[in-house]
Length: 67
Image (cartoon, rainbow, N blue to C red; front, side, top):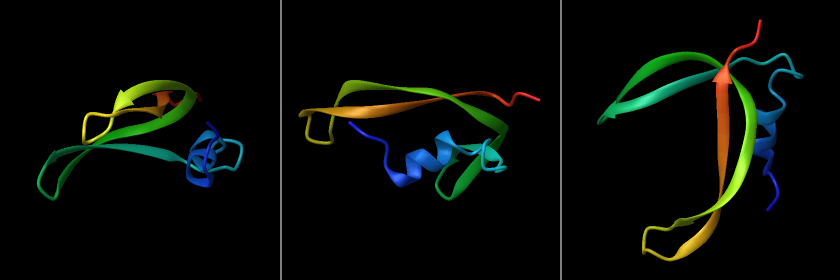
């Protein structure tokens, strides 16, 4: 599985001088700002789709922003 352009933008955000901000969905049309984070890696693993069929997904790992 390869990274899409969107995933690559997340992976390369620091090298490109871009900030990465994390939000959590807490309700309908409501989000909570969790802060600035940094890309820490990714894993490929199996996960069910909406119909319960197994497929491969990318799990992006985020961590605290390194100063």
